[in-house]
Amino acid sequence: MNNTADKFILLFLRIITYAIVLIIGYILFDIIKNGFTALNWQFVSSFPRRSGAAGGIFPAIIGTLYLVVGTIAVSLPLGIGGAIYLAEYADQGRFNSLIRLAIVTLAGVPSIVFGLFGLGVFVLFCGFGPSILAGSLTLACMVLPTIIVASEESLRAVPKGFRDASLALGATKWEMIRTNILPYSISGMITGSILGIGRAAGETAPILLTVAAFYLPKLPKTVFDQVMALPYHLYILATQHPEADRIRHMQYGTALILLLLVLGLSLGAILIRKHFRKKFRW
Amino acid sequence: MSRSRKQHITDRLMRLLLVGAASTSVLIVCLIFLFLFKEAGPFALKPGLGKLLDSQWIPVSFQEEHFGVGPLLSGSALVTALAMLVTVPISVLVAIYIAEIARPAEREFLKPFIEILASIPSVVLGFFGLLVLAPFIKTTFGLSTGLTALTGALLLSLMAIPTIISLSEDALVSVPYALKNASLALGASHLQTIFRVTLPAALPGIVAAVMLGIGRVIGETMAVLMVTGNSAILTFSPLASVRTMTATIAAEMGEVPFGSVHYQALFWIGIILLGITFVLNIIAQRVLKKYGMMK
Image 1 (cartoon, each protein chain N blue to C red):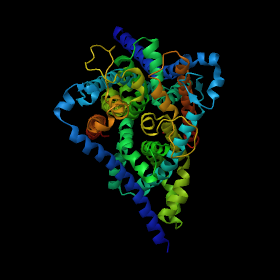
Image 2 (spheres, rainbow over the protein chains, first blue to last red; image 1 turned 135 degrees about the vertical axis):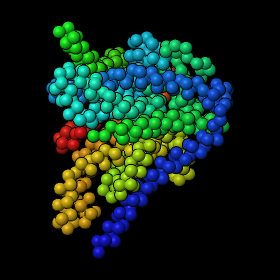
Image 3 (cartoon, chains in turn brown, red; image 1 turned 120 degrees about the vertical axis):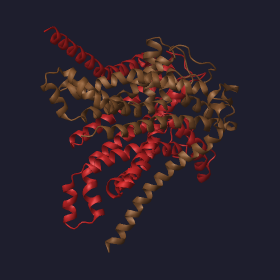
Image 4 (cartoon, one colour; image 1 turned 180 degrees about the vertical axis):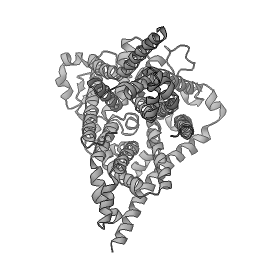
């Protein structure tokens, strides 16, 4: 007698789950289908004209790539270094829990607050002005907790025996880490980190106040220059542009390129991780 | 002897470097608080913090400016509450399905597919909301504009769903098998076990997941900026246009003169946001720690 009710509830749960799957599928389909019609070589390789209503989005793509590279350059060494300390050196003391509290806090800070922070510290106080440098540093602060958490997980996956064996042979702690831990965990650390950084590439709020220029028909020369960026470009085209209703194809094209960049980074990281997981198995 | 000395020095040096790297997080958190208060500070002296309690937010005016954060706070609260109303039941049910019912192959597909939603940039979701969801809301409810609190809430709910599903699923999976098996052995059905044993046992983890979800939703900027209509009025109607705290900062910071009263008021909004997410985060961590669900 309970069986029909059970079956009904099971069906209900399944319907809800697949409704979510359908919605995600529809969003992707809508962006890909409409974006695809706007894509051509000229769109990704030329400069915008008529303040973005025509031409391409080349400088925005380049700007976003610069920001991603800048963010990686700052956050990867700091994040991985921090994770090594937490996984290999830290004991359960005060300092350790202070660092963990800071990481958790940082992970919860809203992206627009990072924007305010970047504006206050890097743009104004350090005097970098709105620039690639200020934007990359702001994004790096934002992704730091993700990188630390991912890297620590990868370090902890290395079996304890590897550490003991190395120390028993007389290696110092750093030698043990360098020869017996890092070779097996570095790939996991980097791929985990790229997943976090991919998300930063799509962020708009932090770069809104620290780097982004809407219409800048030239490429940056130094790290102190402003750049165009894909997320900001899409935001302006879709909401602030006087011809917003008539340039939907430009907007969809930008959205698709941004989506491909972010999903591509994540997908690449996931594939690499799969490869290495097969290689190192114990 | 000299080699071992060199080894020793390298070892100490590396340790120092790594401590330094680990300390950056603490430094950044301190700098965030310091600089938000530094930029917002002068507002407390002139015109005084009482101005933040005004009932209106009219930062630019020929007569008298008003910096009341009330309407913005209510905008954020309304959108967040609506979003959670939609998100929580859906996410928990989907998490139950994935953790307890789906076959392994199905799980292998569902988990990464739902993760994709988390990696779609918020500005792209906002764009989708603007072109697809807003017109839908407009025709469904016969409104003059589809840019409403509800539209923003539905988009935010899409953003929070993957986070809450994934954390709730972790909580469900970490319930000990012994509990489930005991329930099954006593003759309870699969579903009875799920709803009367597994779910209650995983509740603290789910509560923490919801807290973190609220923190994320309240801090989201671009999607709400694009679809909630941006009118700073005090309202509790889901079909009215509202403006959230995050959207206000993003929309107005670009146009204010640095150091002006308006500029400082925007930093106070940032401080309020930071305070809210900080408290939610701490509570979530406490809950997880108390029930031993910390990884």
